[in-house]
Amino acid sequence: MAIDVRQVQGEGLLSPGLMRKLERVRIASKVMHPGASMGERMSRARGAGMEFADHKEYSAGDDFRMIDWNVYARLDEFVVRLYETEENLSACILLDLSASMDFGEKWDLAKRLAAGLGYVALANRDSLTMFLFAGKIDGKLEAARGKGHLRQMVQVLDAARPGGRSDFKTAFRAAGSQLHRAGMCFVISDFCGSGEGGGLAEAIKGLVYYGHEVVALHVVDRLEAEPELEGEVDVEDAETGEIVPVTVKGDTLLKYKEAFEARSRVVAAACATYNATYLRVMTGESVENTVLHRLRREGVVE
Image (cartoon, rainbow, N blue to C red; front, side):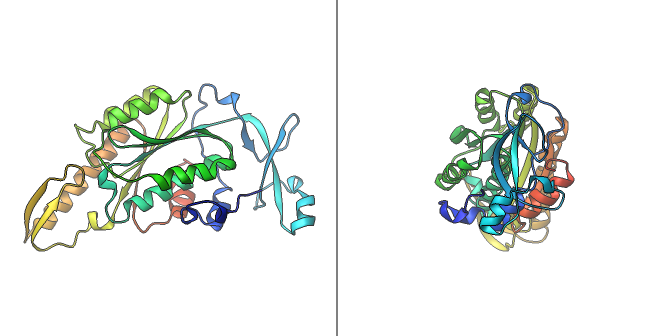
């Protein structure tokens, strides 16, 4: 049965309604990764030799033969039985923990995205690994499978506090050395410091080289894209702490927006070079829309 999110610390990350919707999709891999047949991915299909694993709420398209009538008799709810097959997917979430993520509503959105994608993996009994990183790995959830690990995942996210400078190449190399099987890697970040010093392109290349499919979710606060500044202001680099006095006048904001968009294009180009899916997500956008609609259109979930 589905876990009551009210019993989980950090219940604000996932509402019961969102969890029910997330249970209806699964992460979609475009290729069969080596070793994928050795796991236990849950299937909506019925067949011989499969063992009962869990229940999910009935939704249109489910096999009505899988309805558990005993549960219906007790709770007056339609749920279907899920069985373990020999399919499995390794899902990894790389969540940026650098100081620049602590601006506006970026960190809150990033945590919700991580929780939402993590729950999709757990609900389908995919193998979920989560790394929180800045210059190094600062927290992780290792090879969790099944909704019983929801509390642990939420606790890892709730305990995290942004800080430090990003180093994608070093962090991804460390994460890759701990991933025993290729699969889907979701990178959730604002990609500040992702140029030559941050090594984003090389970091993505390293993941792809080892067979991972990469999905980059570029988290952007609306005040970053459309700042409301005028006059004499002091601008602080969130990751270095450097203070730069700036006079905002005339075309200053226009030049800033052009530079901001140019940096975004660099990130998108690094992803395109290695066939990684790139999606920019603005604060204020719901996890439901990002995961269930935009990522579905990209073929990342089904």
